[in-house]
Figure 1 (cartoon, rainbow, N blue to C red):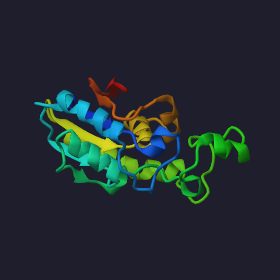
Figure 2: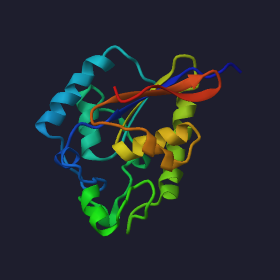
Figure 3: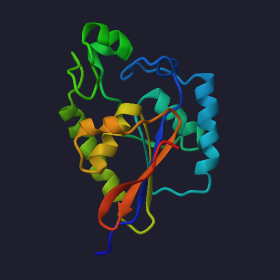
Figure 4: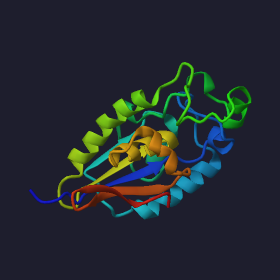
Length: 193
């Protein structure tokens, strides 16, 4: 068998009111802002003419709207692509949480009523397996629409790193990143562009 050379393209959803304000958003189903729609539409040209064997999206409205705006409104919804569940911290900023828990981060500290890194890793490992299967053929591409923390965690798992190493990958709204292979090694091809 030859080395895999397919690619996985990741798109973080466009701006929402809460992402703009730095509020943790997982289960709250917010729409894109007008600016979020405008910037997401700018990705349409970058994806035009590129064919994908599989297109997946988080079930959340902000990801589905972004997929639709860039021309992939028929993306398959995969519940495992949902954002990291913030539990009691839903809608709060890191600064607000740190008033109660100094130094808190999603990557290193518990989230009351939310997901642990192990739980996030378990569901994203299912996605990674699916992405690897779909991208193994020569030139096969997969497109994924998702969220900041979950796509960063997915990237860590793609690279066989712990979920918590997702902290090393800054990911802005309405950006395109690419994962792939160098020979048999899973790698990052482009990030946060």
